[in-house]
Length: 449
Ligand code: FA5
Ligand code: MG
View (cartoon, protein in one colour):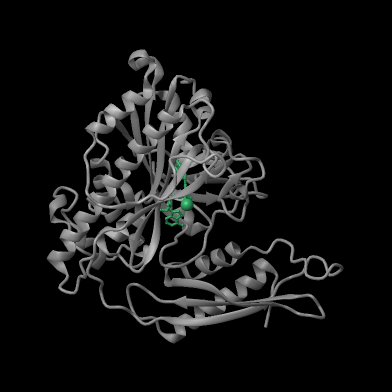
């Protein structure tokens, strides 16, 4: 057996991820085989895949050569790249084994494309960049969450030494004038920065941060307007029941350790506000540590899968991983002809099989009552996913209580089994559910009720 340069597999003390071998640390290694398999898929590089098409459309809004594109960084990074270089404190919850997939104590599957920010700033090859990549997170299970998804990172910098007289604010405003405009009303009720909630950095003048913030917001708004106008055209062509509503967007204040001030952009979709991206003015320490202290600018990170769901009206994030011809054939030819983009036509909806499981948590200490040690919901999610794979649509907590006398905690979850590709028999759903129950006992030490 000769592994191809993209293959991924586990054996003994090592693991092969997309053609590179790593030493596992059994105290840290927590990557299940379905996630390991996904590292080889690279949907954002698969022509005519909706994730690839969505990447192409976002890229078109950030043109070369101002923006240089990086689309093939390896998914395994160091804790330094993913966390330390970005200013995450040592005790940040995102670093926990319950949230992140580790190979060993210093090596993990990137949880966001920001893991590559410092390296690309250091390389200093262009004024701006875009990085598209698969990212990995232990997370909830529902129709908009999957343990593997895709992000695009973008950044734009200006160099004090290359701007006449060091007048950065004026230079940024001149570039802002060159950007496209749009006529959508965007809700943006907060000031450009706020002393407590969303502070200006000491090294920036108010005029600089304000100009950079405006350039950032306009660039991202125009991209979302473009996505929505393409989605609308496709819907009007293909769906007689389409309700043509105006696009609504709003900016909300946010926090990231590597930007300040920071924002998230939300889009109104299917009756609710959906967060599509996070962004902000890059913290100066990143440029300083990358050896380019005279630069300043903005960065953003967007969820490509979520944008693809909006663009094609795709109802479930699992569909992106489908190899079913009825899914993939709907996008054939679109990468070369973006104007032929069509809405996704769902193949028939198969019936759901909901099943409940309830259990007592294993208590690690009976002395103080209800100390339930290390129980984390993401462990339940992963056990369900590892037994039932993509046949699970949704997992949610439906009941939880603590016994008044014993102090033991009981949890009840509803698991919805539903295949995207065929009707599940009740027997099949029962077999999956039995497997889940067994695994909960074996792996979490719970007592079934
Ligand atoms: C980040 O990951 C930051 N790195 C973004 C950033 C970059 C901020 C640069 C500032 C500067 P966050 O965890 O919010 O932030 O994720 C960014 C986007 O990824 C979200 O807005 C959402 O669109 C998408 N996303 C997050 N989690 C999931 C998930 N489980 N499934 C699908 N999409 C997700
Ligand atoms: Mg967020």
